[in-house]
Image (cartoon, rainbow, N blue to C red; front, side, top):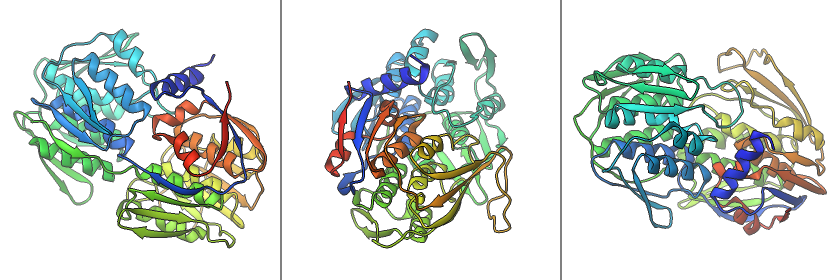
Length: 455
């Protein structure tokens, strides 16, 4: 059994999936309603932020996903009590924080990259942080240099060993002037979670400003932090002596919302995504409209549906917020296989995020990946080293196939492709999807999908 399959099975077990393989009879429109809860990319970070407090925190709208289980286990290893007090509600009590061992953390965190965000809070609370080899989706190089450089700037000492990384702060952590080479979401979160209790003022330049970052800042402010978001991606953080617990309702998961929207388009369906909001999806909605997809915005969600007329090709350039998210392009590409003409997706964030297209090609899609990207006179996002481009020509009928899921977003895209295709598909490693999509099997059933589990 390879490591990817092991990761998938562990993730499936955390959320109670009895099988890691699903058989889908495609060609049927998805119709109905799904509810999206809090964002994976906020809820897990909010849980880590609870480590900084002197008192318990109450987090609402927490999704029931595998990554939340990973963070719950890690917090438990450090003595933080995590109690489910209601549907999607967690009480996090950090009053008895204690040191953990490498082997404990490594066993819990093997399939997640969240552990690196524990560094700052643990250095403040314990004076030491242990980071095992990092897992996560295999979508390209995700160097931790940004994180380690930032932590060193605060005064942390970084020692590498065969087990992973050990950080200490014998003289405490002090405010720093930090400029990120790229507006990395993870590195921005690292700086925020470290700077709030560091002595002095921290200036962060070229910061990420995604909605999940703004929601994390709102949480930290509730806890007692002083954070100013300035123009041009500059954030100032004035360190404080102590932080208190928070009560917060997590921002909705805009990645899940966009995924179901793409599923509606690809399968010629009609899906109401309850909990989705317009403002955080505006860039996606513009592209969705250009493709020919229809949407109706309501107070309690957004209805996404196929217009019944041919879809149109588009050119998409992924970018950091407020650009088109890299997480959105994978499910959208499945819908673009059904558009009339030549679409181009320029992937500028991760250099290996088109690996999922191999399965789509096997299912009949006409997709060519250009490993060195493509020049274009109409480009608005500057070219980056290692970027790639995918050219999709449609419409092409998709047919069933045996598919092995490679990562979280690519995995959901494979599900959409199997649901779109004529015939039967067997999709394995579906546990990886549970890392970021809550109750996705139940939601497929609610939308009328025809599927069964394979032992």
